[in-house]
Amino acid sequence: MIATPQIAPLTLDQYVPLLGAAEVEELRTLAGPLEGKIVDMVNSTAVGGGVAEILTRLIPLARELGLDARWHVMEGGPEFYDITKAFHNALHGNTYTVRPHDFEIFLDYNRRNRELMPLDGRFVVIHDPQPVAFIDTRPLGDKQTWIWRCHIDLSRPDPAVWKFLEPYVSRYDGAIFSSPEFSRQLPIPQYLFYPAIDPLSDKNRDLDPDFIEDVLVRFGIDPRRPILTQISRFDRLKDPLGVLRAYRIVKRYFDCQLVLAGGGASDDPEGSAVLAEVREAAGKDPDVFILELPAAAPLEVNALQRASTVVIQKSLREGFGLTVAEALWKKKPVVASAVGGIPTQVIHKHTGLLAHSVEGTAYQIRFLLAHPEIAQRLGEQGHEHVRENFLITGNLKRYLTLFLHESGAGNPPSGSS
Image (cartoon, rainbow, N blue to C red; front, side, top):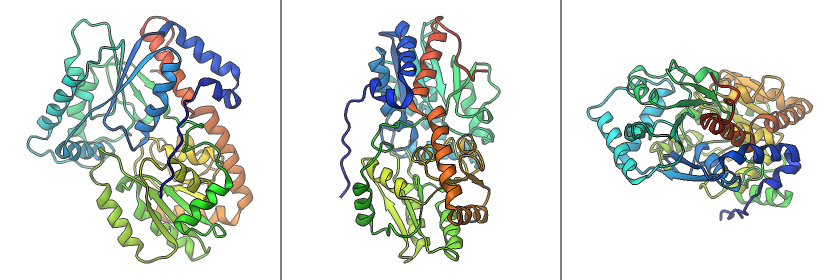
């Protein structure tokens, strides 16, 4: 049975113990000139993945500050999500073979969804490629600001997909990326916004030790032996099979357990196939726990991360990887791939350890298991790094600054180019 999260209305005052009163008051000051302004945010799923998690927390906080923040989720059929998943993988560097009518199907779903959404806000933020063509119906001469927020690593996109998307992106008033390496040659301003976690959400808040122990008992995990954990969607780009291989190397030296836990997103059609591959590869190893958790299980994810000895994120490509920030916030030592936005979070030998292969991942895990005092220090330094850079309040501050700039009431947010 999955615990039901108790979602209490959060207020900015509840962040004062973490941030200080001055930081919270600055948010209120920045939001003052924007009171009543409509902000429309659009993405492709309400459940699953980092974008939905960010918007779930960002929208209520923006409303508390007086903005009329609205969240719209586009709808699509299997053929649309098959195409957008292929686009996603291609933008991360995979080769994409254009099939007949793919682009037409993509544009048709954009057109149909756009007809259902008024999007009459002063500011419109379109998240990721799925709704990028909404810009087609922007009224000429309007006074809106349209921003494209890309959460994907665009450092090596497939040329065919980027050639199709770039003309739409270029018509926005600005683009936001999660890392300087992801930016492209565009005729519009570009901004650097880090994704963020909410330290007060059920996935990240402090938990009673008895609840953590209960979760381990429920899943049959031994709290007395080392626990290696990767929390992520069952996605090939998260390389769960590589994590299994690294675990088997470590197992030769340490009597450890492996937890692969996560779920899917409504716009990801490959999840069930990858999950089946992982289960087959794990075989009957009693120390491998493959847990398919629904989106309504943030408390279980929180407990598993807090119970872990080492948290892994062995992505092959990564836009940012908020599960890394989640683990660092919990003061856990992290071993992660040096891809995408992960090195922004895991500063090698300071807030965690980076790896470049299965063998390298196994070596770094073994090092941490053999040196628990270093693991503890990395976790503590990682926690402070997240507090300073990757909390939802900082993300909100950047949006407020950008909106002020676009309305002529302030300077652009730091990180613009």
